[in-house]
Image 1 (cartoon, rainbow, N blue to C red):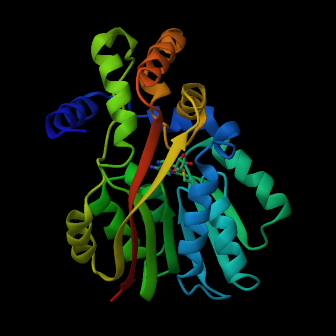
Image 2 (image 1 turned 180 degrees about the horizontal axis):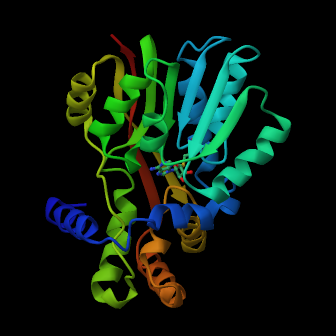
Length: 285
Ligand SMILES: C[S@@+](CC[C@H](N)C(=O)[O-])C[C@H]1O[C@@H](n2cnc3c(N)ncnc32)[C@H](O)[C@@H]1O
């Protein structure tokens, strides 16, 4: 998205109080289809590889911020069982309902709480966690505040780790949807508040300011090409990465909007999205 458009949307999101719950509402709607989204296997694989390299050990006390349907918590649970502890938080009730199904079978040291992640972190005793992770979720919060609270909740020597989208992530989605919205502003219900996630330099500054020593900070990308316009539309309507989109639109205009977007995609030569994200791990000094 270009700078002018980003600035306009940031302004609109900042002024609009009606959009505050948009992401939570959208994750509630998408919880049932979240795990079957077309991009999900690729993101799960990236999450698994990243977490397996973090040096987690049995006995560690972990927090999983924005745990969603529980996949990232499951990976932490397997690494720190049988003596550790994993506490996952998420502010979407429906996503947590899916996570609870996992807890009934596959999780041994994990519990979930319905909470906004900044409030959840703020409620933890200082120095009480050995590991705090947030996978594909930290971009929903103001980064400086989040890292400050992460650092406070970590024990000295404890690890923070994140997979976080940068502001260039899914730019193809923005480029496809924006012309439709500009032609039909009547589709818009509200402007979800946007914390445009940082680029690598911005992230580095925020992490250093918070008191975390950076151990790994890499820019990565993953591309997914949809086989046709219909599969791209299903993904936009039901996946986690496109959350916020349907909640920003008037319910009675959704079908019209997605019909127009489908036409937009069909007029192009195929449709692909690129996740651009940072892999970060750091230690509390
Ligand atoms: C893309 S999902 C990631 C879920 C999980 N970590 C994974 O790797 O599959 C993002 C999750 O963050 C949650 N979320 C977004 N903003 C949040 C906030 N401020 N506090 C708590 N959870 C939040 C959403 O409800 C959603 O379940």
